[in-house]
Length: 266
Image (cartoon, rainbow, N blue to C red; front, side, top):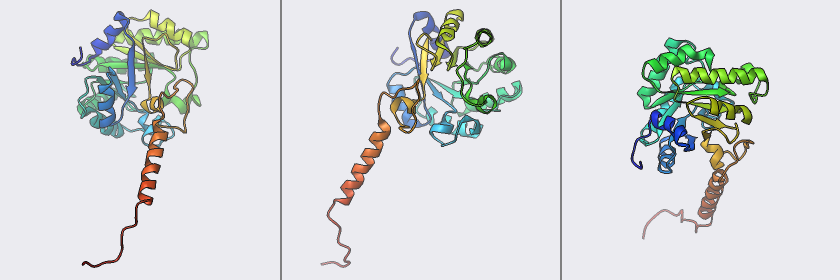
C-alpha cells in the first residue's frame, strides 16, 4: 500500500477495517509534500487558510480564487494522499453554482470537495456527486456561519440539535458523501452518528469516538503560538522555533567582524 494512491473509496473502507483516519490541512507545496511523506491519507486545502495564512478574522472572506491558488500549489506536490478542497462561503448557494465551483477546484488539482451543511444543501450535494465529483460533508459547528450564529458554538447539546445532526448525517450519506467532518459536536452525539451511518466520521473537537480526526496543521505544529484551542493542543512548537532560529541567525550576523567600507585595491 505504500505507493497506492488514496481514493475516496479507500477512505470509506477505513471505517469497515477499523483503521483510524488521520487528516490535516495544507495550503502550499512544501507542507503537502512533508505531510504526504508522513503518510497522512487525507489532506484538506481548507478555507481555514483565511485565518492561518491570509490573516483574516474568519473564513467568510475567503474567495474561490484564493482556494484555486492554494489548491494549485498543494496539487503540485502530487500527493499520494487524497487532496480535498473546501468550497468557500457563498460559492455553493445553488446547485448550479455549487457544481461550477466544484469543477473549478477540480481543475485546479483537487480530487474531492467539501462544503458546510446537511439537508439544507442537499440539492447542491446531489449535483456535485451526480457529476462524479467526490464529496466530503461537514456538520456541527459551521465556520462559514459564524456571523449568522454569533460565534462558534458546540452542537448537539439539545435533543432537537441531536435529532437534526443525525438526520443531516443520514441524508449526506444517502446523497453519496464518502465521509463527514463533525466539528465541535458533543462527544456523545458524535459517537452516536458514527455508529449510525455507514460512512466515516472525521472529528475535530468532537471527542475520541469518531472514525478519524482532522486538525489544522498550524495548530498541531504550534505555528500560531498566540492562538491556543482547547481541542487542538500542539505536539510541537515550530512557531517559537522559527522565531528563535531567525533571532540566532541575526545575532550571528551582528557578531561577525565588520567588513571594511574603504574602497580601493592593493
